[in-house]
View 1 (tube, rainbow, N blue to C red):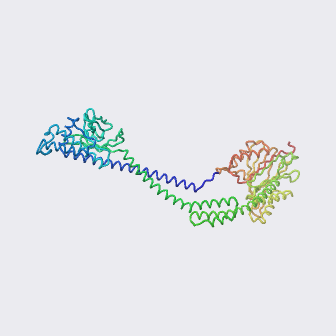
View 2 (cartoon, rainbow, N blue to C red):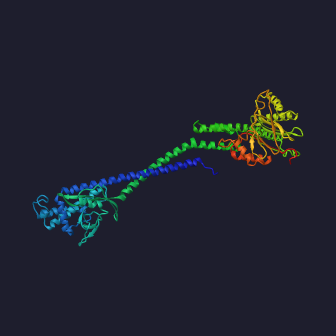
View 3 (cartoon, rainbow, N blue to C red):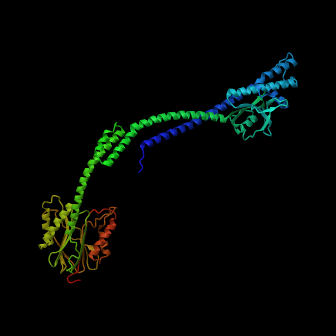
Length: 595
């Protein structure tokens, strides 16, 4: 696998954190300052507009007269481009004209605009226009906005506005070659764009909102306030501010703050990274190298090196110490594991030999007595472990008698197998001396009780049958009931009287029962591993299923019947483990001379 560096990963995380913090902080700063700057701009537009409206309305009808005269004589109003410089000249010219033509009278006190002749009116109107233009320009400078202008509806039906005072500095040239401001532009103002402009005029009240325009003059906000003289609407005083300018200021401030934030973050994250690298990352990398060294060399001395270089006993120090101790424990474990593995291999080998020895002790060559046409016989034993406690035996006591033995030692494994060997040997030896089944088990019982400190016992079913007559004797010492099939009937259990298991109690006298087989009768004997076979649902195979399996093919030879029963047991048990030895023996009595 490709190696990855934890230090590089931490560095990448710090870089991502720094960049993300700068972007988030910058974005939040931009959004906050945008709202703040825009609110400040709107406040300034309201202040300048309200201030100028108050000054206009304070002059009363004089401004109304100025507007009316302008509407009648628009061509006579000529405002030079340098109106601020020309303002004193216009004022002096008007005052000189009044003093010459209206001696002893003061304008605004003794005479009004209507009292003047046309020339006097022209001089006054030009002077008044220059004064108001100067007022507008000074207000723009004071409040740092784009410009202020005065308009009135030229035709409300046509939705047009006349720009009476429009300081956009658009110029025109007079016949005598003078450059003057271009006044009185009549412009169509679309209500969908100039919503608040028309609402301010139509309602005659200041609106809370403002129009946002994006035209040849740029992106601007427009705020309009109605001008009233003696309660009647005269026009609108509007102010504008450039959004582009505002946005550039916001962007400049945002970038400056982002730069400062970036520098602070870079400095702090660098310091933090260096501290983490020295106190954490380099120590983790060192632990990783030392563990890899142990992995490559398997040198136990690496454990001491890891513990020695653990450093402070913080989480990393304790982790390094734990790794060192784990390596030491692992070395001890490996030594013990090698020893245990060797011992287990030896035991497995011994068990394998014991399994083979046990198998060799049981009759396995079938047909067992090919010269004896009086019988057919087959047996099998499947141990639950390597060696089992079940056993079966079949042997000729003499030329005309056969002994059938099946038994189950309590317990499992090697101890039960050893007890089985002793029990099998003793039973066979006693029967071969000519003793009856009852006499043989009584003697064997006493022999097995001697020195039986482990308190093993063995259930036994034992029968000796005369092959010429079919007569015989059987003893059931705590064992399962055998199944018998008479002629062409069905297999049924023979529920003879039970005696206690062998080696259960010293001094027992066993009693035997007569048994008779007619030619064609069949016996099936087994250990408790058959009916007590258990599936995953803890259900037992039971005697009913056993009899059903036997009677499914009752005419089968023992060599076919036993594997068939074992197959049904396996299918019933499924994946559940085998808990007990499974031993079965099948016998058919043909009678003397029966082929």
